[in-house]
Length: 221
Image (cartoon, rainbow, N blue to C red; front, top):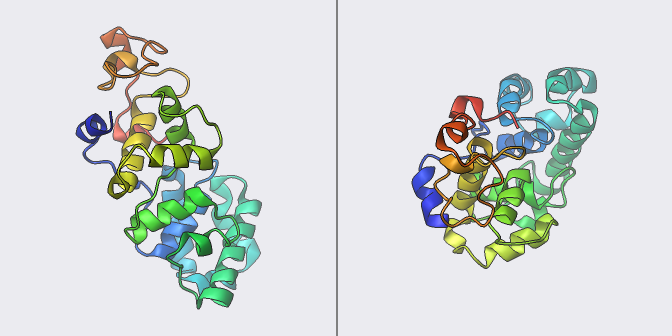
């Protein structure tokens, strides 16, 4: 199934726009409860105004909340990005650390966010257990766990470490485009012959194909 996902989604990648580890860290925190597409609309203004941890640590809260408002939960997110920026300045000389143990000490940063940053900004393999990833690996029968850390641990034993980051992207792409939460496009899924959950969505090809989202429309869940 992992090999077939690589064939189905050869272009799988991080869909958050970034140019530095700091930008990716902040963008990933902002992506909670919203879409990557929405975050990508907000971050150009955010990083033009506050280009690094020092600048964001000293941000005017009113202006910051105004920028973040479209992402939802903007007051909590403002707290998180202010807090993590201040922590970066105070404890890491304004630089994003390269270790999981350090990243998860930052406000608003858990293992999922840390793995996104490690895998995509620093090339350190990591499994990104977001809602799509957890849903799909449970449907695949790879784990019955609900807790993201336990899911990460179990899947890590099944996939070679060097592939963790790319595998995460492929699963998330598949979750956004094919294996939707409410109605999976089973009849149009390249994993159908192996998947124990085949049949939870339409199996008739035409009906299933109508559910498959294009890349431009896939970032709505």
